Length: 367
Image (cartoon, rainbow, N blue to C red):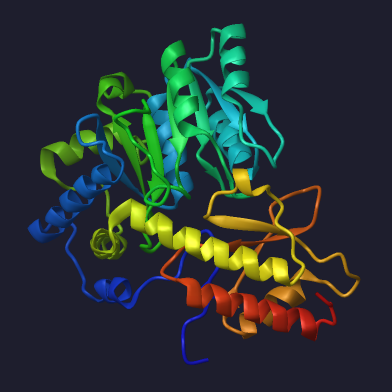
């Protein structure tokens, strides 16, 4: 194959050559040039969600889940009580890590095919006043469902509850406005809709709650308050930073601005999504979610109801044609997922649909 495979996954993603080339230079973590890159990236992340006046950015080594865990441990006091709004696999992961951090956790469950309900949230907060914080997954990547962030934020603000938002699969693509939605911690990562490479998460912490975060975390390496304090004093990371990941993100964010920022990134992803849906429907493949609750980030499809279908064979045949798909995350029905994000456009999405058509024909599965 004369090109890299296209990653139709929710991260890692297909990246541009410019982003890849940014990683060819070595950087000293204490050097002034690298400190300047860190500062530029932190400022740029605030710009994405209009958080310049209300929030600070704390980057953290590791995958996005590292930052979710760090945010919970830093923002929620040890005697806090967290309510997790659960409509998918990543919500369940948030609940588990909250418990592992030693915080009291309560789960409010919703169907996987439906957004969480702000009305149900308000009723639960009214019924249980011991709840101090709420966790929302903005785009639940297990299915691709979009959850109502502004409405949930309004309920939390009205009830005086802290809000922690996992925006891993939405940050940079779906609109988030920290001027109108009060969010205590907004979490995302380098290898998602900003189209960098994986290896670094970041948390936007609301300035108004910063001082309350001191001493909450039981971890040295994942204490975001300590990381923030050290960065403010020195400009440096406390421990060895992912230098190549950070400079790749800086380059990816430069391309993000050149493209037109969040509105342009969303428009391209929506076009990818529409190309994918139209093509797959023509092959007889049905999306799991109703279109009105589907985010244009990753789409879950029902697996073909055919005795010849086998996901491993389906995956390998698509891979042989240059496309990496993603397994399903549901427990009750067999599915597979196709991502619409990354440095790809309509042409790559149509090629992916064509590849799936060839694979189904090869497996003897009629449209």
